[in-house]
Image (cartoon, rainbow, N blue to C red):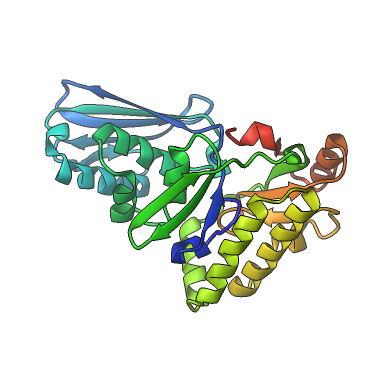
Length: 292
């Protein structure tokens, strides 16, 4: 989510960019009389396994908290599509990005499960994990979108966002994954429901998405950052890690972790050198990260 983070929960318009990398789900029938789930990371290593009986009771697992969250999702699907679970199933997932990056392990999973079960992915999200739904929209999008949430419905519209200055945009991993649920709880504690702020964020989304120059784009990002820093009562990532950076740094998603977006007037080599000297080795160009 490029703009509208947190505020999207209260109806603000968000600009969201689907990533090139995602997650694959394959579902096979088995004759074992149990359900089995196996998840592989981007290095083809198993990072999670669970075996259920046909009633979706957990029999064995490598990670109990993850198994319980998955059980909740599958039990919801079983409740509305019981015939899908009559016989044993073997689900296999594979990530094409490192898990620590936080690019949507849960959202791509929910989208894929909704496709398999032929149910509305937003309903599946809102009835199980909760959230704004923008990441569900991105999981099924083929390019940039405007997204907004109204009650328990999500709305996504494709937009022609491919700025001429995209080669001057970089995604920097902050070397830690942030808890989105904790971020949302902090926002809800601090935000007082000011509809004027919601409209201000929606206006910024429009302005940023239509910026004709890097300077206009960066100015919009900075205004967005300052506004959210005030609401959250939290320091900006730029103030914490990149105070001497000549461009603008904008947090993405839950503040304090995962990726930030950096604008740069410098050459690619100079930009990469700056971040690596700061200890941030994972720096991706716009075209390497975003699905165009």
